[in-house]
Amino acid sequence: MLKKTISIIGSGPSGFYTAYRLLKKSPTPIHVRLWERLPVPYGLSRYGVAPDHPEVKNCEETFEACAQEYSNDNTQNSFEFIGNVTIGGPHVKLQQLINNEDVVIFSYGCQSDRQLNIPGEMDTKGVFTSREFVNWYNGHFDYALQDKFNKFPWHQVKKVGIIGNGNVALDVTRVLISNHVNELWSRTDISTMALKHLRESQVEDIKLIGRRDFIHSKFTNKELRELWELEKYGIKGMIDEQYFDRDKFELSSMQRAMKRRIEMCDEYMKPFEERSKKNYKKVIPLDPATRHWSLDYLKTPLRINKDSEGYIKSLTLCHNVVTPENEVLPQLDQQITYELDLLITSLGYKGVPLSEFESLNIGFQRDHISNMRGRVLSRDGKIMPQLYATGWIRKGSQGVIASTMQDSFEVADLVMEDLSSNNNYGKKSIDLSIIPHTTWPQWETIDREEHRRGVKLSKPRDKFLSLEDVNHYLSQPFVNQ
Ligand SMILES: Cc1cc2nc3c(=O)[nH]c(=O)nc-3n(C[C@H](O)[C@H](O)[C@H](O)COP(=O)(O)OP(=O)(O)OC[C@H]3O[C@@H](n4cnc5c(N)ncnc54)[C@H](O)[C@@H]3O)c2cc1C
Ligand SMILES: NC(=O)c1ccc[n+]([C@@H]2O[C@H](COP(=O)([O-])OP(=O)(O)OC[C@H]3O[C@@H](n4cnc5c(N)ncnc54)[C@H](OP(=O)(O)O)[C@@H]3O)[C@@H](O)[C@H]2O)c1
Image 1 (spheres, rainbow, N blue to C red):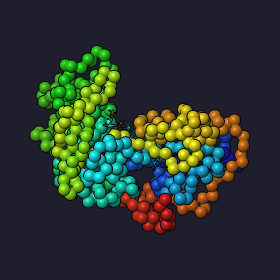
Image 2: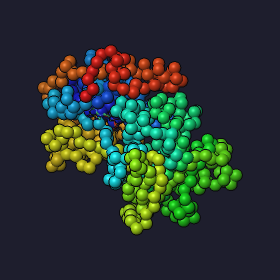
Image 3: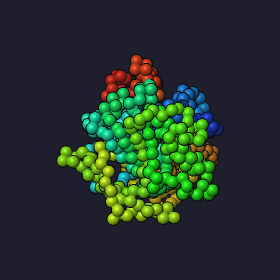
Image 4: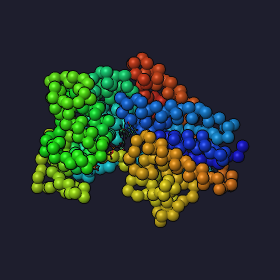
């Protein structure tokens, strides 16, 4: 059967939801190839989402069912997973894909970090970006076995600073402050090695440091509530009254979610007996609290100070003023220093262009591919037929899996619309026989083995932590590209 060929780069939620929509809906016969840099699929669903939020990973069941249904060349629409191949790496260039496929869709997410650009950020031991740290505890092949984590003196960690107050910062706070609570983590798919190291730490105090004020915090209420609820384990939150004074907020002009956020913080900071609403009195806090987290505001990090061995000692910051237009004005003459044993910068992931973008004239703006509703634009702003972008690499690192799905469906619909007016079937897919890669059945083998290893530890899965281990297990060597 003659089919249009569609290559999707990246098998995270955006790539997989795009494939799903196309396979389910395309009236034009198609063959979808989903290329993935790692030997395993699912992107941030597997390596980002917090291990104690397993319900968020339910999207993987949809992806699995889809892959199984369409992994058959005889159906009108068919699917192929090609793992362990980096597009732009030594085996497959982007140019090749463009030459050989009818459609190429970029869904490779945000693979780098936003930075503070302050002294000490890149060369101090004990300063990690949230992306690195999250990848480490989720067992990502690039980080799981890195010495900078596994040989870090976790036992010395008492005071932690986290820059940023988005939901990733809250995930990181939860992991760091509650890892000793067995019922929260031991039955999750968190890397067993990372959990062991985290449990050596003695975290007493975590400051979540925002550059703006409470009203402009980036987290959402559900995630904040999860932190407050840790009080039942002796983990207490607080906000200094200079940043949170209920009487000073203009509640009448606020949206419901913000009013609820203020009420939530106000109630949880009261002694248990003084709380007025049942909602905040579900479980009695464990007293006295031995671990604390706090929401800190209106500060700009200026420099990271290290000791003679290169480990973080402290962070110097200055106070900020935020204008009514929401502009941050650092007050350099008002500096303070926090003593810290660990600093995580949680500023958002950063999208980066593929190396051939420049030569292929593909536009890239700040942290995402230039596009118009998902149609990729050239550097001079023209639509590039055949190329599309979706997910985080289309918009930057914002949005949950549900909004990413919505975005992917819209882009898939555009692709189908464009394909319906193109009757050329001249292209021939890249020959895979000479490219070392993992297939969907091989991923299923890996998946089964991770479950099997997990059962032994009463975990849902125990992930492979190195490519060598995967290689060895599959006993079919493939090159890491
Ligand atoms: C720490 C964290 C926690 C989160 N928690 C939640 C949550 O609880 N609930 C929720 O709804 N959302 C959550 N999100 C958001 C959610 O993960 C994103 O909305 C979603 O994963 C974005 O999907 P994506 O496919 O665009 O990117 P990704 O998931 O990053 O997928 C990109 C994929 O492309 C691959 N790739 C990269 N470069 C190449 C290349 N050159 N060739 C081939 N493949 C490549 C990568 O390996 C990766 O598999 C979280 C995000 C983070 C960072
Ligand atoms: N449970 C969940 O549903 C869940 C979990 C994790 C992630 N996610 C989603 O994933 C997306 C990404 O989350 P994220 O937390 O990585 O990003 P985010 O929500 O964009 O938060 C980034 C934080 O970094 C701060 N920041 C950025 N640059 C800074 C700088 N130069 N100096 C100081 N502070 C700086 C931001 O402050 P400003 O606000 O001042 O810019 C903000 O507080 C979000 O859509 C999030 O909702 C969802």
